[in-house]
Length: 201
Image (tube, rainbow, N blue to C red):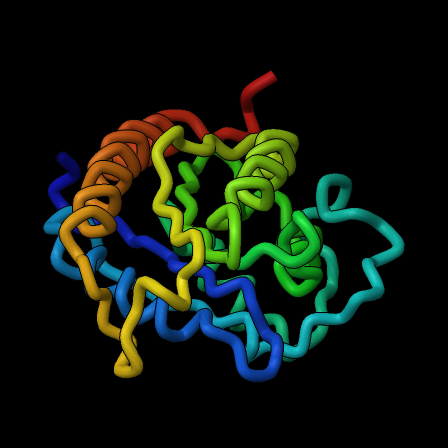
């Protein structure tokens, strides 16, 4: 395990009005905060005005391209993270546009870093959204881990105060995912330190 705690960015992907995301994010942040490997930075995309228009030159070609001033803090926090957990709902069998915008405005920030997922939706628990995100992050040279946390019919699983009715199963799934994420984050952080990923290939 790394001598210093790994920096885990928990990205809250939903920005819709009346969203359930903060409830799930609060629960997961507690699970991650209890894991000795990580310090936690919760990045709520609702706090950032993400433009739908993409830059004329993609960040894969120009990683340090000019970005809107209001995106500077988001970019910095993504860059500083050693690992990510993306929290996503599922809308029409996919993930929200806000999340796609945040992904597409960045490139090197994701490279050679591990990514886990927490999903919630009315039927599938967002597994379809998670599988699509795995494909996208693979294109960005990130490493998506196998284990994830899923909440199908989430509205039946949490009470009115946002507390899980039966917490043992989700807590166990979160620990398995965080253990896997910590292993990969440690290995990839050390690898990037020894040789910058930009020099590969």
